[in-house]
Length: 527
RNA sequence: GAGCCGUUAGCUCAGUAGGCAGAGCACCGGACUUUUAAUCCGGGCGUCGUGGGUUCGACUCCCACACGGCUCACCA
View (spheres, helix red, strand yellow):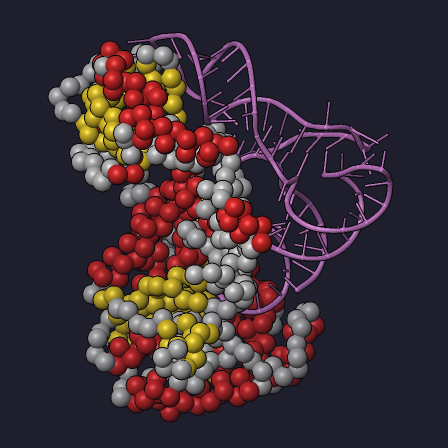
């Protein structure tokens, strides 16, 4: 495809596929494809269906008992997969076939298949190709469970070679940008993502076992509320308005509780226009759940149950739910520690904010410990800063941190015994926040005040202050019953349960900077 | 956003006080009916991330930029 035009395009304006260049191997494979068409009249891309009776894992399980040289012809196996390796020996060929379940050896024999079928395989099948196979299982002299192939149908031809078979694909950039190559080459990566799927199912099952129903609320809306974060902005042409991608699902879900939906949850992507690093991706998966008539202690029990069940799908049943994260054993089995933010700060810094009524005193004590302050912080803000600076990192084992100041909890109900604080917890694992829950504020008058408070912060330059949501006030003026709600950072939970160092290792396609003019403001030429 | 490190064949990686760019796997041709990182014989494959500079000569030295990784700062 190196027409004059194509060449010019590549030089003058990088195309999205620039960087994947026509190399020797691809040229050879395209030639081979043409020869396959002209010599055999076979177009592998016209194959539409293959009646697979059994995946490879079935063969391994059912025929594990076969002895050396024993063949089982009781059942014709019709299976399929990608050819990973080929070992050609003249009139016999060994290959490894992989599907989504397993990897099994194939044995092609001249005598067994007949010259025509055998020669086709020898001549036209390459590593990377997809094939449909029929044959009988047997065990080789070397003890390897193998399928003796009777028929081989070339289902699809690969024009690009597989990554190196021994070292796999290591280049992190290629692994993230072209995850399909990573998944082909690295079975452990496939396993991480299978675990992710099982964890998500487990979370859904635990919630649904408690009568919680899954709902969907807008991702695109005119107001991004429910958290303190900067949203992504977009524009709706027909309506002529700015719109935002959601930063949380909270305010919509509580509207549904008002609307008498009972226990609801949503698991989906949130979007925050902030930095990227090992713990943060601009889009990430959150689960939020709301239970009427429940409180944050019920949410603690639910959090433990969700996480323990999720751990179980990773480690297996009847095993202690203790997992190693980056070399540290994390115990999800025993009840998680519960401690108030005030006590934890006192424990780690000696500063006791609970007895304090003076903001200046709190600032002085924090400043003495090296915390940078603007001089306007309340003692509650200082408490939070001290917690973030001196405590957070140390909470390695699962810990419920309770009693956050009202000032930093604009949607949480006050503690009736101490209105400056809320009935709230955050769950920390490995020094990172995994869950956040509280008794939902259902006093519309207080909620309005809290929003007004956030508005003042926004006007003072806090870009992450909460937006004022008049309709949400309207909703809870209709009456939100006493409700416990919780959010869980699903990606982080998956990271801890799969021993993944970066959030990019648990997202199929993590956000990456584009390589070319693609994504820039430049006009995409022609068309 | 800042600092450090990296970018060489399809993949994994070597490499040179500045002097024709290397290996293994993959690929191509040949041999081979129990191999499994098959083996044996022969072969091809590179804008050494991009753009400048220094130099007789740059993959190598210098500068800028791009992308990635790590650390830090903000956030989940």
